Length: 624
Ligand code: ADP
Ligand code: MG
Image (cartoon, rainbow, N blue to C red; front, side, top):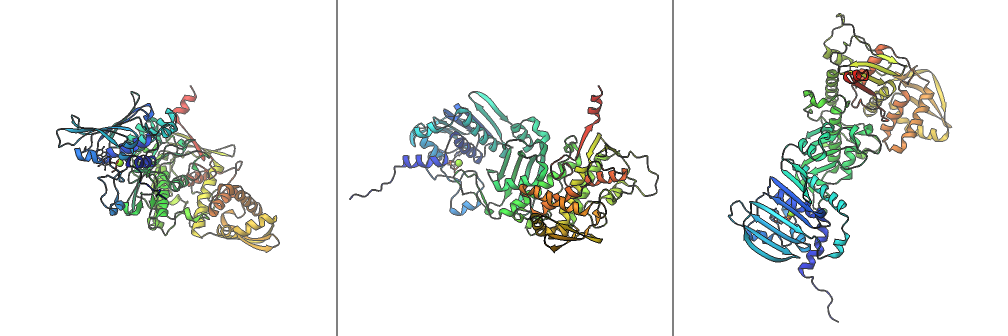
C-alpha cells in the first residue's frame, strides 16, 4: 500500500499558520503597527477601508528595508529581531517570530513600498497568496508603507467568518488604542473610510490618554509610579468615582507590550477595596517594566499572555502601589489635589505588609522582597503625609485647641495607628496655654451628621459611616499587629448561641479575642465573656455587640473577604457610634481628625460615603 503522508506545499502551510496569527483585520493592524514601531518610526498612520476588509494600510517613517530584506521579510520565520534561541529570553521588540508578514502575504494581496534613509531608490513589492507578482525599484519616502487588500480573499471560509463592520472596526480600534497608549511619544493617526478618527501627536502619557479617552478623562487620572530593583511601575489609575459599568479602559503593558491578565487585574481591583461601587470597573493604564529574563512572552501566538518568574511578587507590588496612589489622591472629587504641588509627586513607595487575611495567597506579605523593608516608618510616613494633605484642606479653618476626648473614638489608650492628635498639634504649631482664636466648632445635625467648615466650602460627615471607616482600619491594624487591650469584666457574662452561631464563634474565637475580647467556650453552645476591648467597655451591651458581630460577619460571607477583613468590617459595623447618638463638639472634632488620618477616608467599609462637600460657589448658586 502506498504511503499516505505528504508534505503540504508552502502556500497552504502558510495559510494554515496564518490562521493562528491573523484571525481578523485587527490582528493584521496590530502586527503591522508593531513592525513600524520596531522599525523606529516616530510617525505611524493607519488607513482603513471597510473595517479592514477592503484595505489596511500602515505608513511609517521607520528604518525601511533593503531590496533583499523586503523580499526576505515575507518568508516564514524570517526576522531581523532574534538570531538564536538565547535571544528569546531577552526580547525587547514587539515582533520576534518572523511570522506576521509571511502569514498576511498568504491570505491577502499585499503591496509594500520601502526605502532606507541611505538609499536613493526604494523597493516596491506586490505579493498575492504568497506569490511575488512584482518587484521593482520605486520612488518613495523613507520608511515603509504596507497595504493589505482583501484579507482572506483566498480563504472564503474565513472571510465569511468575519463579523459586521462595526464589530471588526471595534477590534481595530482596540488594537490601535493599545499601541497608541503604549507609545505615547510617537505620532499616530487613524483614518476610516476617509475620515480621521484619531490624530495623536507624540507627547507624555497623560496627554496620550486624554487623546484616546477624551479630554474629560484628565480629571480622572491618578498617577502611579513606583520602583524597586526588580521592577518599575508607572501609569495611571482612575479615581473610583469615575469607574465605569463596563470594562474597557483597563490596560496592562509589560515592557511596553499589551497583555491581558486576570491575576494582575485582581491585584489592581483589590487595591480599590470597597471604594468601587459593585459592578463597576476602574480605569487603569499600568506599565510594568521588568527584566525580560524574568518573563516569558512566548506563550501564545498573539502574545497577549505572559508568564512572570515570580507572579506573586508582581501581584503584591502592584496592589501596594495602586493603594499607595489611591491613598494619596483618592479624596474628594471637589478637591483636586493634582493642582496642589504637594500632590504632584508621589512619595517613593514604602510598601508595608498588609493585614494578613484568610485568603493569604493574594495578600501582600512581609516576606516578599518588594514589601520587606521599612514597615514601621512607612506607617508613620503615610500618616504624616496624609495628615499634611488634610491639613492643607483645612488650612484657615480651625486651631485645634481642644484636648480630643476618647469618648467617641475609643482605643486611644494603647498604641494607635490612627491617633493623630500629637502630630497634628505639632504641625499646627499651637502650644497649650496660648490664647487661641475663637474656633468654629463642628455642629451636629439630627444627632447623625456633622457639619464643618473647610477651606473651599462646607463638609457634611455621616458620623456612623465615618466611625465605621476609622474602626475598620484600626481593627485591621490590630489584627495584623496582634496587640490590643482587654478590659476585664467585673462580672463575667455568659452568652448562649444557636448551634450554627456557636460554631462560627468557636471558629473565630482567636481573631476576635485578638481584638481585645476575652471570650471562652463554656460548652453546650455557651460562652463566657471575661473581658471586652477596652474602648468598648461600658459603651454597649457586650452580648449584643458579639451577636451583631456574628450577624455582620455572616452577612459579609458572600463578599469573599478574608477572615480578618471580614471581622474588622463586622466589628467596625457593630461597634461604631450609630445615627442618633449625640456627640460633644470635641468628639466630633476627633472623629473628623481621625477620619482624615485614615488611609481611605472617602467611604465606609461597606461603601457608603463618609462625607460630602459643597463648594462656596455652589452654595452661593443655590441662593440665586
Ligand atoms: P517579526 O516582526 O516577528 O520579525 P514580521 O513578519 O512581522 O516578523 O517581519 C519580518 C521582518 O521584516 C522584521 O523582522 C523586519 O526586519 C522587517 N520589517 C517588517 N515590517 C517592517 C517595517 N515596517 N519597517 C522595517 N522593517 C520591517
Ligand atoms: Mg512583526
